[in-house]
Image (cartoon, rainbow, N blue to C red; front, side):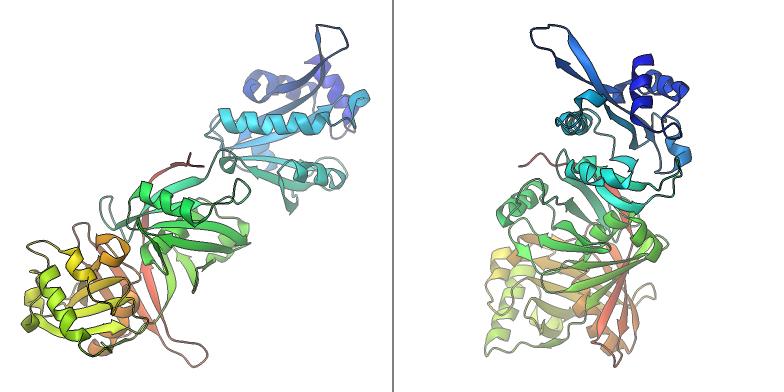
Length: 448
């Protein structure tokens, strides 16, 4: 400890260098995070210690938390990166810190980030080693100002993923979606890689998110067989991950987030334990192609057992993605009772994604019931489909003359979706979709 203390004092002003007591504590209590840099001399077998790095675990990036070692802390605060004066300007510091980062990432998977404070003249060095500058620090240590920096260790070992139950009040309910945080610095993840990952999860949707700027993320959605344009429950799952697992100070303060999908900008805000998502309003129109309606009716009978007599309305979304079938409430329970024939449902060419079967609800608990079948995107039946409510809410809003509606998707898992129709002159009409989410599992992908 005495030798390391001498190196420390020789490298830092007196009002910034660690005390002997602190150096001793860090080596005794946080020894797994105290590593040295050694070199061998010409013809000399004995290695020579020329530098060291020491760190302690903490729960938050604050002076009080960083002043002691908390073995359960998810952050690792680096206190000293020191190379002996006569060995500087030879690249040893870069090699030592890079080796340190990779060692910690490989051997301490439960740590989330490395954090440190640095003077302005050292920012380029730390950034070149992978750290991100967060701005001026509130920590006072000596006379000169410091800057906060961090490095996300989870991204060093592979893409982090979460499985989230969206629109769920209890585990086993709602609709599970996988969310993968993509790190573009690891490798160029193309569409083929994303599709393979989605197949591995084999959930109705897997969302891939990537930070775009401070409170903006890009998002893409993949079913096990193809990419889809929009997905409500995967959007909800992604929002929960960003707010609760990846949020930065900007998002925490505003409680707002923007997800940029292929063809939609999805604004989301958090209120207590729920998420409110701004989704596009989609009107339903009559099936436009001559003869297509009759083909649809035949396929609904063969695919889901829906008879022509039970159908109240048969239409399609303006974007031709989904068919909407309103049936009599007494017939709703019979839908798919004898099984599904997805091949039969795939036959019509007038839609590109799925079939929504719905009915008005006579009880006061919710306004309508629905089920969603996605034969053209590899989904037999989706447990809870947020994006289907872009059609369902405007459709039933008009029928029931209501702006606020509650829908219940009656799959085996089931889920409640709250909707609000918003119309104003300043912008296009849209649907606010509200739901909650539960984290079921998380981990790291090893698929390269």
